[in-house]
Amino acid sequence: MKKTVTTLADGRELIYYDAGDGEARGGYPDRRPLEPAHRNAQTRFDELQGEWVAIAAHRQDRTYKPPADQCPLCPSTEDRLTEIPAPDYEVAVFENRFPSLGGPDGGRCEVVAFTSDHDKSFADLSEDEVALVLEAWADRTGELLARPDVTQVYCFENRGEEIGVTLSHPHGQIYAFPYVAPKMDRAVSRAAAHRARTGRNLFDDMVEREAADERVIEQNEHWIAFTPYAARWPYEAHLYPKRRVADFTELDDAQRAAFAPIYLSLLRRFDGLFPAADGGPGRTPYISAWHQAPKRAPGAQTEVALHAEIFTVRRAPGKLKYLAGAESGMGAFASDTTPESAAIALRGAGR
Image (cartoon, rainbow, N blue to C red; front, side, top):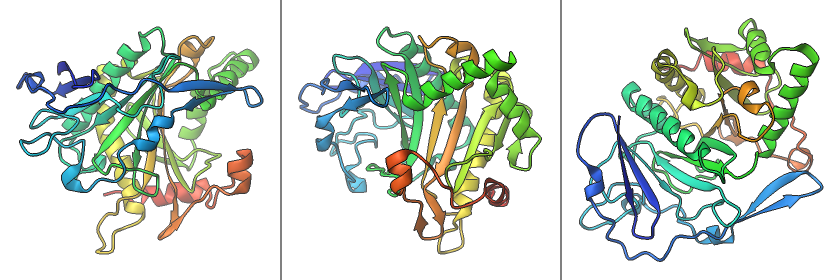
């Protein structure tokens, strides 16, 4: 992998990742007359819930559903200058121009452009392209965790307008939190309690239990995907490496080589749930959320397991799963499907 680090006109960092020793893409300067980047986000603590909240009022002005010919994630041309100055790229990562984190309280938000092809989706990538994205995730995880103002690194992808995506170009984001996010904080506590009670790892026990159940969607020698026993969303899948690791940086060569086929297959199964009008695969809206062990949380590095939680807000053709009063107001989920039936549907939806 070749990594090229450069700087955008407003001082933000831009990193190109290439599979081979190709062109030095950093030779293309950012020619836009940009104002200095926003770095005024705040974090505030909710004492009642025991959770941190990011305050980022400048995000009201972020780019919102631009037409394809004005996409800020496409490569730059002579007539159109974008966030990526090079005329082509494989994977590009840059600091978000409208970050939720990164003010005086620390943290950082990055955008990961998976491909220069505006019309692709992650599921359309080749296995080699996915392998390069994985290398970028691992590299960013290692570098961000090394920062003193970062506690947890969260890589994720939102796809589809129903999810709230405002840029249709295939991309994801990385949030480098200066604190432990609420969901991870609960997982760390549960894992510690399980270790104290049983002497075993909670994630290992759960994966072993799920591997013997009817909710397994697919697996290979190094990875397993299943619908969890207490799934919150109508269609939800979790993907784990069979050998527990704390984050992307700890994956060995065999795990990395086996990743792309199963991850692509899983995303394509989600697309197969709701076919397009012409009978072909659809573009199911989803969130793919990668959980990694945080720093400075007692026991987290040895107890928390890297894994993805993938889910869609679509519960049936033309119908969305809205978070109603109990779910939005109390965090008390009620699923519209059984996890067992969702696993059957996902097993049958591959392409």
